[in-house]
Length: 372
Image 1 (cartoon, one colour):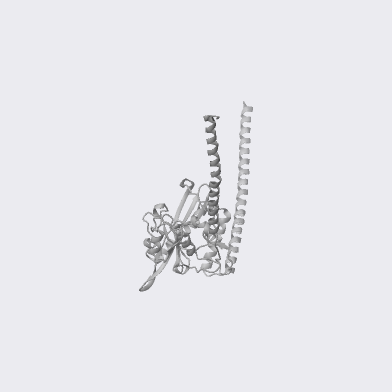
Image 2: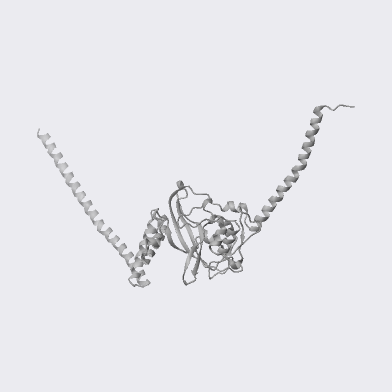
């Protein structure tokens, strides 16, 4: 009987262990690949991939790169009715929020903080606004999901939105940028006694989180062209909306209505803010001569039209003004030329006098020398 050495036994055990490990590795790798495929299928079904989310995420701008910033709150009157080709914006937002795809934050009335501490509890929000729902499949405590029937979505009551708008002047790019930071749907509800509807702001959503989904929905924004040529993302990025300013960020956290109770003063304050925002970048640069001339002509034309004069009279007076300025210039030139001639004559006379004086002086010196 042969005796097997101990080192050979150890080698056999090592080889057997490696074979078992090799058999287990492919099955583990196969499980990982299946889960990856499942995640990709879920992303493709939603229409938004992880790469799209990374693409639309905006990097925070450092205060060192900014020379000036103004935060403005606007109210957009956005009544919308879903059609076969166009989904309601509020329905799209509610689907994303209830499916836990987009985080939403509490409405704090001017003190918005977009951190995990101020994320809303979706179930409490639905209960607070009396929206019927059911728990979706796969819903857990850490990842709650809810399903709302189409008829239970109060899209007909969301008649306006609040947006936070930032106007930033970058020192690196030397340009003004206007962008929407967040959006808040507002419910308009009347009580049991009727009267004017009361507004209930629901929650804030960062627009960067919505952008990958807003690009998937095409809309039309022109009554003359009913083809959907733009998306919801274009609507906000290109600033196609028109909304009045109801607040600007200030130290006392007051709205414009609180600061200006009179309607005329409120309208004047809103117009002045709009004018300052739009003309801020223009005031940074020195205007050219052509721009100054065009501005003067526009002011003169506005003045003449305010006096009740027609366009023909405005053009005639403008031409007369131009001819008068030309004639005044030519007259000035004519008046200046004889002065120059007279000065030349005076210079010639003075030179002749000087020459005679020098000659007389030279003659006197010569005669004195001769007499000596």
